[in-house]
Structure formats: structure tokens, C-alpha cells
Length: 483
Image (cartoon, rainbow, N blue to C red; front, side):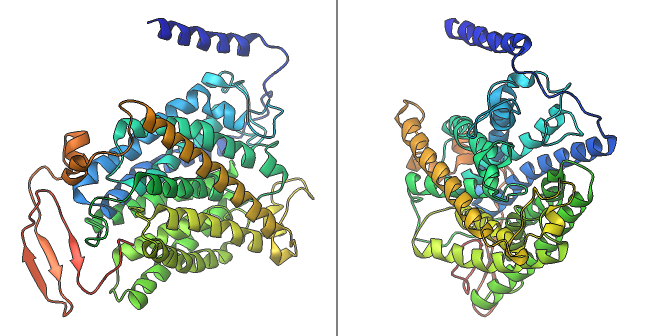
């Protein structure tokens, strides 16, 4: 009770400061635009839809015994971040009254004054709406990262990790990149909708989590296959659909830039899906792999995110084609070095986001970046002979990687030292599956599903699984992992 009283007193003092401090006046409201408000409301809902989409996508890629725990982990992470965002996360990431190049202040803690002000980044919508939209980005990011340790991370320590990680890692990176005074923004790093802020940070975090958690108990003894391609398919559709709000909404207006970003998003996804599926057929000797197509769609969506609002829509084909090939081999490289990243988060999101940042530094054009901004204030890429842009992009990637990797390692070490918060589950729980051990429920409560094995001559053999609620789809001619 004593600690609760102290917490309430601290919270009240923050509210009082926001109400009485005359030296930090909120940005006055400018004329609001109904069309912009409508579009960002819709975009916020679209990005939220990606959260259950990600849960389905990850659950389908993983093992049946962990399906429900994976979906719950993604949704739990979102809930934790939304709470953090309201308390102080938004203010740290987007406060327009901070004079720091590194982090915001607590001016908008508890979202005080957000209905009656606007943020200079989004001058035609209320700050509250801008905060809600950006909250969806923050909410999905740690969910991306924890896929690397699907089936290995306990839920309670995961929630603690997500709260601290969002505060120490995500909020500062968002401020650096998107705040008017952020040092990466001042450096002219181009990240339209989160190639580095969301995907590179999540990919690097996933890699560190995978390395520090250790391999699965049966790693190297068998191939891990996508247990439910239908989940993967449905999750991909929700992600693809929602990404139109993720990128299109990042214009924070119903504008030409929003049109270009949404169109580029769709073009890249189509190109990436077909390219990755083709690589699966040519290299891994698969047929028309549904999982391969879906993996390519997601990789392309990741790669086009930093550049979608800075390129002409037709250029997006390149943001689908090249990243699909690069990430395909990045997955193979992770397997070659025996990095047990359960759902290939580092190879798809980390490498895909970084490669998309580099492509943005090459293909961004002034005729797009100048739309809706003061002439002479935008930058472009190599196609417009801005040769410094790729090195600047690399500097941004390096900064995000270093910050995310360093603090993730520190957080894992510290949390593991706290009694009762050891992050990795023990062997019995891992072998049983976290659905039953952590959640106490099952994604498949009505019994087992038969296994369909296809041999090298494409002859099907039907048998019942040995483990309840464990579905495997195996192909003897394929020695690759799930994507």
C-alpha cells in the first residue's frame, strides 16, 4: 500500500506540473482537416489489425504445441506497450516541447493536453489521434522481436521485458528518427514509416534474445516446419491489408504522399511474394510454396516501409524483388551458423529493414520527397545524385543496431537475475509446449490432426501423430526451415 500511495502521489505531481507550468506551453491548435482525421483514424485501425495478423502468422510458422502462447504473447506485448504509451511513452517519443536531441520529456504524460493541441509533425489532426496512431507502431514492434524465441520465453518475464524495452529502446529511437530535434532526423536519415525504428530494432532484439536464450532442446535433431500454413496465409492477408495504413497513414494526412506510399506497399508485396516463392522452387526444390509466398510478402513489406513515401510507386518492384533474394539467403546464413531464431525474425525483419533503408538511400527522389514540404528542406538518394545519403542511412542503421543490441543484452541479464523472472522456460515446459504449461489452454482442444507426409516421389502417407495436438507437415525433399 505504501508503494501504491507513493506511485499515485508521483503521478499526481506530474499532472499538476503539466497543468501549472507556464514555461512549456503546448503547441496551439491549428485548423484541423476532417479528411486527415478520418484517414488517420482508419489507418490506426488498420495497423491495429496487424497485431492479431502477426499472431496468426507466427503461430502458423511455429509448432502446434506453442500456437496459443505465441498468439497470446503478441497480444500481451501490445497491451503492455499501450499502457506504457499512455503513461509516458508517447511523451518520451514525440514530445514537441523537449529541447533534447536524444529523448522527449514528460509534458504529455498521461496524454494531458492531447485533445486540444497538435504536434508539428501532424499539424492537421489532434495530438491524441497522432498519439493513438503511433501507439500501434510501438505496440507491434516487441511482438515482432519475441517471435525469435517462440516456445522458449515465459509470459511474465516477457511482459516485464517488453515494458522496459519499449521505454529504453523503442521510445528513444523513435524520437531520434521522427522528432523534429531528434539527432538522426537532423542528420537526414530517411525512414518514412519504421524500417529502422520498427524492423531493424525488432530484428536485432530478436537476434540477441535468441543468442542469450540458447537453442531449443531438440535443435539440430530435426527440421522445424510450419505446422499450419492456413494460419500463415490468414496472418499474411491481415498484415498486408494493415500495412496500407502502416505506410499510407505515415503521411499523417489524406494526401498524394499517402496514395504513393499505399500503392508502393502493394506493389512491393506482390513482387516480393512471387520472388521468394520462386527462390524456394529453384533453390529448395519446393513446388508453389504458400508459406514461401507469404514469407516473401512480409519481407517486401518490411523493406518498402522506410522508402514507401519517398519513391515513385513503380520503383517498389525493386523493393520487393531484391530484398526477397537477400532475406532468403539471410535465412540460410542463420541456419548455417546455427542461430536458433525460431521464426527468422533477424533475417526477415532485421536484414529486410536494413536493406530497405539502403534502397531508400538509393532510389528516393526529390519529386516525391518535396511533396507537401517547404522547398529545399527535403533530401533524396543516389538517383538524384545525393551521394551522401547511403552513408547517412548506414549510420542510422548502425546507431539503431548498437542501441537495440546493447540494451537488450543488459535487460536480459538484469531480468534473469530477479527471482521468479527467469526468461527462459525449463526443459519440461518446452517439451510439453507453452500452450499447456504457461497458458493452460490449447489451440487445438478437440484432439489430434493426422499427419500428411510426402516422400521424394510425391506419394502421400497418412498417419496419426504421436504427440497430442502436435501437427507436422513435412516434405522429405526439403531440408530447409520454415521459410
